[in-house]
Image (spheres, rainbow, N blue to C red):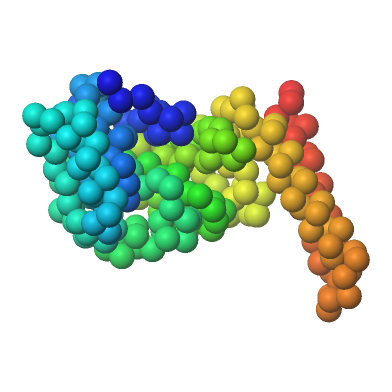
Amino acid sequence: MIKLSHRLQKIADLIQPGETVADIGTDHGFLPMALWEAGISPHVILCDINSGPLDKARVNIEKYFPETEFDVRLGSGLSAIHPGEVDAVVIAGMGGLLISEILSEDMEKTRTFKRIILQPRNAQDKLRAWLVGNGFSIYDESLVREGKYLCEIIAVLPGNAEYSPGNGSALSGEWVDLEVSPVLLKKQDPLLVEFIENKIRIEKKILSAVKNGAEKNKYEKMERTEHRINLLEELRKRSLT
């Protein structure tokens, strides 16, 4: 039986029973294989842009399910799957900007899937801004620890999906909303306080560097950074109540 990491299990928990899944950038293939093994997904597609990761996935298929033929495809982004071919698309472990590029390459195709589960490694704020700007609905988010990092998992619906979350999850596009999602605040995610405190520490380091520097517009940058810290401190207080 395949045992998923906490990060991959959080992603797996967002897939509904009976949904077919395409894992983009599948690497070792554990997530789609686990979804199939658990009887959650009747059909899974393992996709990657490089043959190396797919070879690793094939080794794991042979190890765990030697008598089962999985759908393994070589291709860039969503190019290896057809419009509406699966219910859910997972794109995990990539940078936020790369994820937005993958989704934007063929928006007509992207909007044919029921749900899209994203786990950006960085530029999460830029990814959220792109999602908001392109009509996607962020209906769920969660935090999960992986080593020394806190990973952000973002579940979205295409703009043409008939879904009314009713949870105030629509982002305003303001900096603080893009950095700390209102969905996490509403859920009071158990890792939220630590998540915000990490961001405060980063901003304080930036503030210290600006204070000790001699760059142009120094005081303007200090004021902007102090404002960010104040916003995050307010969010931290709200998350403790």
